[in-house]
Image (cartoon, rainbow, N blue to C red; front, side, top):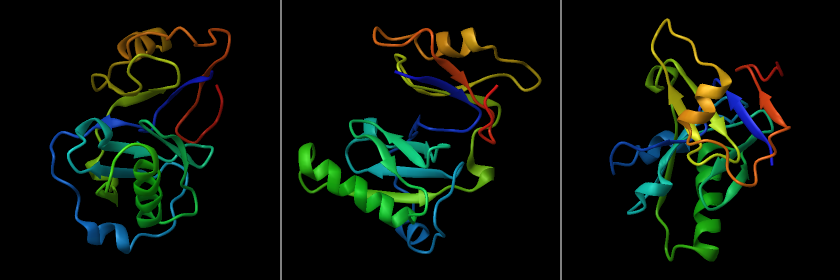
Length: 161
């Protein structure tokens, strides 16, 4: 299991139950690495949140894992998630996806993904710093299946450190 810490968002629980406007998803360009997508699943707050397209071209979605996103439109990704949720988890899922603008993203945060208790964005003070140990601890620590010998640190542009 790989644990990666990055400076772009993968998952942040949605603050409210309101879904983004569906029209925003219909006119979006193909997704690329680093794009951030708001996905809302009606009546499933634990599945709704903000997700980022990773360096591998996928976004990681609760229950479903890695979903191919790079090159797809936001609407296509929303439909893919809807279809996968309906297959095994939710009857008649209602999914709305929208591309988020840079100004809508929370500033000063790192994202911890992989085998940790609470993967997602970990905010820190402006002008402050965040080391790897603090980021992992803020995400609830390493899980039982984490490969402690294979932790990766990536920059926003995807460069390994």
